[in-house]
Image 1 (cartoon, chains in turn blue, red):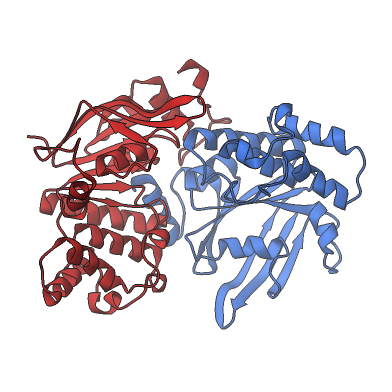
Image 2 (cartoon, one colour):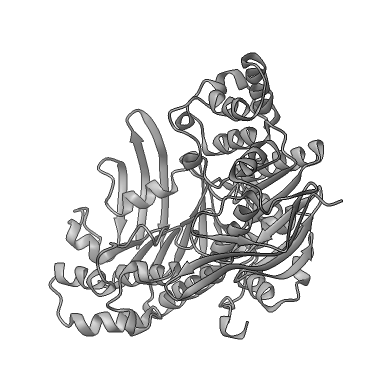
Length: 244
Length: 273
């Protein structure tokens, strides 16, 4: 569902990604783990079509046998992103209804009313929130709206950029549960960027550890749970996560 | 004698529906130790720190039956007297160095500023003390860093500069409000180490305010858990797993662990608290 081969990215003369390759199968949940500056968010940007220049091969979504890249419009139906900060990622002066309707309008899809209501139910938001503005919602509720927006076009792939790190721990649990349920119900493929190893352990099947723009290790989550990461940098991250 | 003793502290803000208590009758004492205050957004933990510093913004009101710092009653001090205390006797480290340092003043000058305002030191001594403070927070080449502007240093170094600025006048009490949450995991430990070192070497009292249960539990001598403006539980260091109050237990349970195998995380049932 996601195929990344020899992805390299440079900003002016600084190379931030060095020949990154990985594959994510349909329905799989894959994590990119690393510190700030390791290049994990740059990979997401490339996959979301937000990087003008890179080298390497990227394929994402269904029907990607051809090398012809998706148009922006087609891509939107294949992949959507959920951002870290639910306070910054929703338009402050548009109601929840406007936000959820917009992708349907752009793509000219019918039955908008019922689709919006069904999506509110799916992400566990009360229907009475439909005509509220973002500032009337809590952080957790906003993140539910952001997830709902990302799912309006039924994309098979979700890119999750630190989706719970701006939230309180009790709210983080709710959102993580929601993401897990949605993945099971809709057979979604997740690519999660995070620095939080316990979140990977809960939500993901496999992970890649990034350091200074290179993947130093790809492992099953089982190896993470049992502390069996093979790279020394992976071990270092594990130790820090467990012992602080 | 304790460094700080607080009894029945209340912080109240007027709203359309009458006064709202943000901090509701908090009592605790602090010695020369590391005290952690944990809670979620809106629990009143930051307002508690601000109330002690005398930095609750208007129209908020602070009242207490007792608010003693170093044998001095903080209630009823004038704004000027509070200002004299801040920096020299108590200081606060804020969350994000990007927003708390002045972007157009060199780092060295910013550290010297506090001494210029409060102290009677000459210019050369101020400069020496600033360099010493930078060395104390383990900045290797203080001379070079002192000449930089805040945007020229990393987040971790920016936070160390903030700490240097706060300790340069050797306050007896330091309040750190989320000092590491804007930092990468790898530098968090470093910043906490530096704080711990300063606390033990200079005999300061430190209040660490954070939402990060695990970090506070590992690092503080004692933890106060706040929920809706009240202390629901006090926990000894390392005893987080033995917490009794349903709120604390709920929080601990809702955190995923590194060897997580639960299919769903338990969610806090606020109706039952």
